[in-house]
Amino acid sequence: MIKLAEITEDNWLEAASLSVKEEQKGYLAPPIGIIARGYVYRDCNAKVFVIENDGVIVGVALVREFTDEPLGYDLQQFMIDGRYQGRGYGSEALRLILEELRKEGRYGSVEVCVKKEDREAIRLYTKLGFVDSGYIDEDLPDSLNMIYHFN
Image 1 (cartoon, helix red, strand yellow):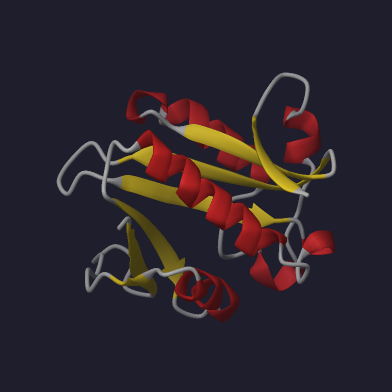
Image 2 (tube, helix red, strand yellow):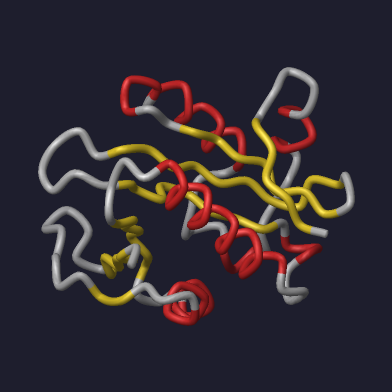
């Protein structure tokens, strides 16, 4: 059963040892970078989640708040270890993250920036209700900005 947990001094090393498939490594930071970003973005209420399946850490995610307009949540990083992909863990974990943010209720949307060539990630986000926001970041023209609106 998939569940979200906080990153702690007891689990950070296990989370840091995760890795995506070789062909995915250019799409996101390594787990230690995700954990570090959680610290760097602490003034943006960053949250680093570990994703567990029956007590085994299978992934990690980072959500922070935008501090400028438009206000909302920013899903900075989201990964499932390559050994555990293709089992539905990513879909379930993303649903849990969205539900957690919906319950928190500070903002009406979540945004994520995805490399256009990362078809698997785009498929996952689309399946769960994310749509193209229409925004193009001039610093990341090879990326798609997607948004999920809470109803």
